[in-house]
Amino acid sequence: MEYNTKAKIGSYYKDGLGNLNRIVKIFLVENYMADGSCNIYDLNGIYDGTGGNPNNNLDLTKEYDKYGNLIMDHNINNKKEKSMNLIKEFEPIRRWAMDRNIHKATVEKQFLKLLEEVGELSQAIQDNNQGEIIDAIGDCVVVLTNLAMIRGLNIENCINSAYDEIKERKGKLIDGVFVKEKK
View 1 (tube, rainbow, N blue to C red):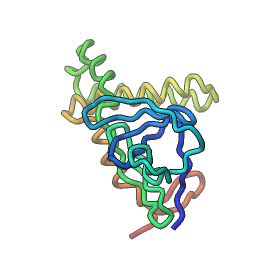
View 2: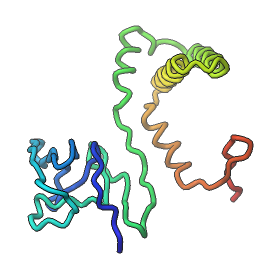
View 3: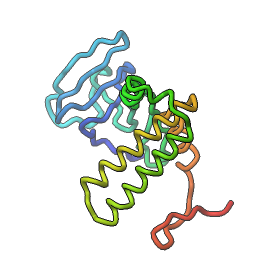
């Protein structure tokens, strides 16, 4: 069986003892111990995942998120992508909104705000203004985060749920729009 054994900088892998490791740069690894401590070590050479010391033997066939959840198995016979695992990535937006009492707004008002931001995105796309496109997409995400919070939802859970539903979806691109296959 073949494996993709090229470690990607910034990616997380587990070693032979089950500790989480993040590739910092070529040959330099942050090793996260089960007790929460972190060791940094140098792999001293091209690392192919076949080292003799189980503590330094990274399994490069499986990638993990920063919380240790499996997100990708690179085995050729098992390329099925795992679920997304967003947890608290949008927490700063929620804190910002609460500091400004946005959490007390109505869902209807936040929905109107979302439509306003989508209109700005539409204009930015029409103007081909990359800076404004970036700003408008970010604004839409902020408003969606707030809308979810007002409804008692967590935007991360909404995204995880949506991704779980589409990750295996098959279809084709027709006139620039993805059309899913009928079941």
